[in-house]
Length: 308
Ligand SMILES: [Zn+2]
Image (tube, rainbow, N blue to C red):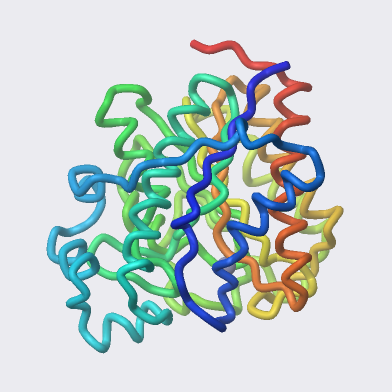
């Protein structure tokens, strides 16, 4: 059986108290995968926080310093939409370390899953919408810097447009960004990705999968990235509080399979990150993210992987 690693750290919890972002979900996903016998404690690997030199591949020094030292302005905290705490700042650094680790493992093993990260609304000099550090971009830039990869692709299937990621990689021919999202939703400003699929409200499984497949397969084949970062947001779910799409649990599994298995069959490694998920019942958010792990493992068994 091919190894399949889950990246997790107990410090992923953003320490938000009662907030629409259920930051305890990271721990609950781990517990669910253990309780169901899908994973054993040995399947989990813990990241180190991303060091400043890695964060600086994407972010401005002033932003990192203000975040780490608790010197964010009132406006900066308002824009983040989450309360400040040192634990929150550290959690973002851990998530960036986790996505970087998942990307490294993916190149070795085909797929790896960071049970965290996906903070796609973070920009180089500020954070937005519950996202302070763009772990997706840090992971890609780090692997490029190390010479492990040349080209990367981001497939962002969160309900919300990946504005930070799009802005960071704008004009960069080495990183292809695809975002499929509900158009009439946060963020108001949507800087262009390489490909944007703007969906109308209430889109269901069939239309979603058709639009994603049409937008995804051709650039994946033509661009042929060594690494794909799959932003597997749980919020396109029809019972999400912040999303306005109408995908079912089964539709979300089909989405996961489409992205992951297609990439593996093209010889592209897949690092998976979580992003949003605000289901009315937290259990559903946990189920959606846990299902992604199961689909990823099945896709790896089906498509196989040979380290390059
Ligand atoms: Zn979202």
